[in-house]
Length: 461
Image (cartoon, rainbow, N blue to C red):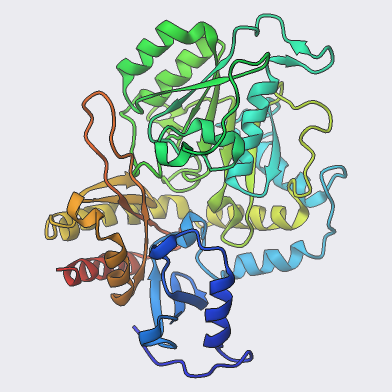
């Protein structure tokens, strides 16, 4: 790990002065926990960062990025396939969704057309697709499709038989984004307090109710009592911000079965899980794909280069004319990056490789962190390229210190909030270290991540 000092303070080199000033001007989403570092370069899993703290200003460090670029750097940094796609994408025109695009057409045909790469999940001819700028925007469109499904936009009234469908089911600990329409899908008080939610009492009001995630009995009880009022269910196949929580085997398929039986739309939020579980989609089990009515994917979809999401919806689900027009609906640049990245992942069998690397990493994390540092870590969870290591109650109070020690040990990582207090006697879930591996991660790099995280944990004592 390099710690060579950075002394230049000019705009042509590595300008620590302007880095510090510009960072202060950037809206701080982290309060006092904001890290005093700035990235000045990187390739693959490596990040070159500059220390902006007063005591060590200008110090240079090279880190391994265990966050996967906030779970978005599919192929790491500066990947040649992505660079080439960006170049090509800028040369093929800049059109909105009103005009067709060859890049868009080729992408969608490759994924969803006859014999397409994803037709095992989304049979050809039964789904259509829209793009958005972020996972939150994608989930907002999914929510709009759900609400429009009960409304006759031509006659401006409820569709026959949909008058009583006024409830959406979500889950304790869920995270679907923090934009206005999505706040109601979250149950944790910190994310809801002080923010408005829609009034369920209006003519087209909707209420959101929450049940424990992964509890088959709670699911059966809810459907038995409320299925006749239920419009949709929104679910993460693996809960991310709650602490990388996985449901028991068969749970997602049973959820899909109940939704289909009671004419309830099933929305899968795969913004985080897309391409991270050893398969393209986490909505699957030993019997194959679990059917959904709407699926939203993001993060890894943009290959770490563009912020984008994709909403894959049943063809009969739509928004009233002009109601979903957006400036950035699968523009050619985004489509070039997505298509070339997906083709590279498929050709190099990176999903299967990431599952192998992730499985080995999970075992090592359990032995090296939970086994040797039980005062800091309690449990390893997750699958494939997306893993979580839950903190103890004592360590949860020292996250800021732990993050700094991890950086000093040469690894950048992030922490999920954890589900916190849960109902029905379920144990409290503390903040969780989230490790997301770019699909190019080697076993050597995974081993090094374990060593560096363990070194950071030792330094906390």
